[in-house]
Image (cartoon, rainbow, N blue to C red; front, side, top):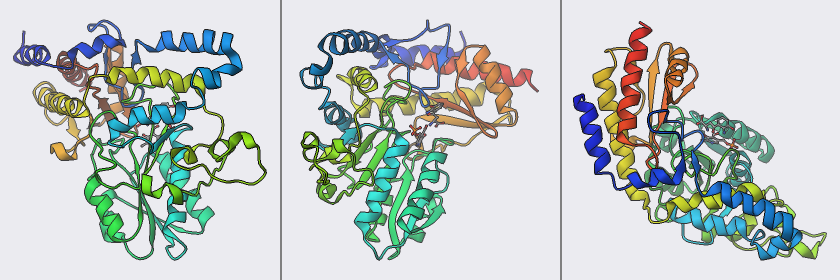
Length: 400
Ligand SMILES: Cc1ncc(COP(=O)(O)O)c(C=O)c1O
Ligand SMILES: Nc1c(O)cccc1C(=O)C[C@H](N)C(=O)O
């Protein structure tokens, strides 16, 4: 056994989260190493039974009664409150529903409306996952504001009296860089603007501290580190003291103060339900609720500690196994700047990832030259990490 394999064994033996892997449906450890949970989280074992019950009993037998009797109507806020502790939000501030893209739209337009008429600029993360940029451009056009794309590092330097809202990613989807949420939020507030954070790549991987850091609005998906399943609904956080000022650009009937009054005039609900739009996607939503059970007894701090240990160990193994100069890490070495993934620049990344997947190491490729490896601490172990780096070394050596 190599020295690194022996180290992996020791680290796995000491891992307090190791038992969580059994709560997921995964192949045998020697079949696949799954390092793509930052795109689609693995299936929690509790989900199929719950979905079966929701479909057969709640829908099949109870039918319409399930809106009340099975808790369908209140699911968006109930599940929002289950996500709350994972992102540092007290109850009553998160509503689950719609996609991240739709929630980016709701949050950004509402942020511009909160900021008031005098402010004519929306600042957006220029390195963002594309959907946020596309929607910010449309939101700017619709609200008559100018869009200013800058890197997160440049944000403090462009803030001023003109800034209405700022949309930033907590963790960069390509590089895995973790942006400084507390200081950027404080800078946005000092300029009198509204901060909107996209938590897709941080929620469930590291502490976010929404309430603690006074974030105004936040959105995120649930199919990555929260393991909600393909297309599972996203969520929207509106800080409690801003909820009365949240003026939704999509005021659907589910966000009405009296939805079943069927009134022609719109009067918004109070609290988190104001972020709703239309009928919730119950099947996906209740699958997500079952998926969130894996968090019982787990703290985000423990997940973060393991995440950093996994990514550190991966970088160490890559340095040992991969021929010098073949890959270059785009992910910051400093812990305070790292999310839960490692991105390696590699000239023939598309071909290399294909070979890796053929050999059972599943990461993903991002244009034009990035190998991306996501580490989900609830089901990835140190032996997985050692194997992934070793196979990567063999694959790139063969491609030379
Ligand atoms: C940062 C970020 N925002 C948004 C999205 C996607 O949004 P949606 O769930 O609407 O496809 C992703 C990934 O798909 C993402 O990485
Ligand atoms: N949402 C996705 C999908 O529907 C298909 C394939 C990938 C995704 C993703 O989530 C991609 C992911 N946001 C990324 O960071 O690349």
